[in-house]
Length: 351
Image (tube, rainbow, N blue to C red):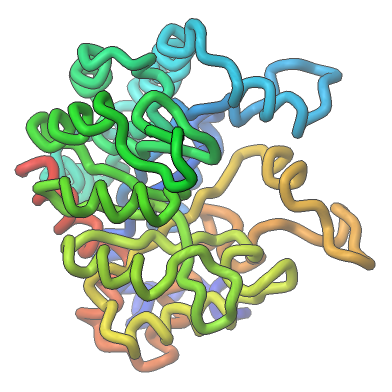
């Protein structure tokens, strides 16, 4: 990987990366300005940040065990709309503090505008819709505040889910919310959704749906997307954002070659039009460390949850370099980097 440290702008892979739309469709870097300014170093054109979630991702309770904190906040419901509005406003203020570097985006075309102006387009998203508190008016309210990607659930059911049977289904409120999201122009995200719920939403949605962060079960057996999921996403003309966490790709010791092998498999199986960059990167990986402890024989000093070569937004160029080295056609590389995401956003947001 020594080539990644060079500065020769005439290298074909580097020219391609700098010219392409490069989009992370699920990102948790929304607290610190410095980590967001690093997007330029990685050549990242756009990302969807998710300051709103069904739990508090960053531990605001010093001294409390991380995992206990996350489980406690996941169970909370009262006042979650208010808490989510605060987190959303904090994120927006961060990006609006540097209008020379960021454009808070509400339309797909804002990505192209940001690219022309040398900025990064920032879409606001949600990881779980507990913040609606069962009120349909809040779906519209969050959209009015700029949220354009809504992941319907996280690890547990919320008001959109009827979990009274063994298989999750959309609740009456969930059906109403999905229809309104289509009407308003929202990208519906089905990451972490069980199959019964996933299939129902795909069938009901009039627009493409996505899985913002996940990985296929094949070829390594570690991912969460079966061929059924992939075929449904393809039929929807949707998107799968590939996760950068080792566990999703090929277990706790997954390598960058395994990540590339996952892309190879998806392309070979005919899924070229749904592959995107998911990421799910964190400014502070305490959350992932709590949920994914080091494998046997390793410590947190010697092991990281995310694949080294792409575990930092500044290193995203490594993907383009590797795909060019694998002789991928330029058109395919551009799709993976961001054009598939741009297509889906154009369709869902209607411009």
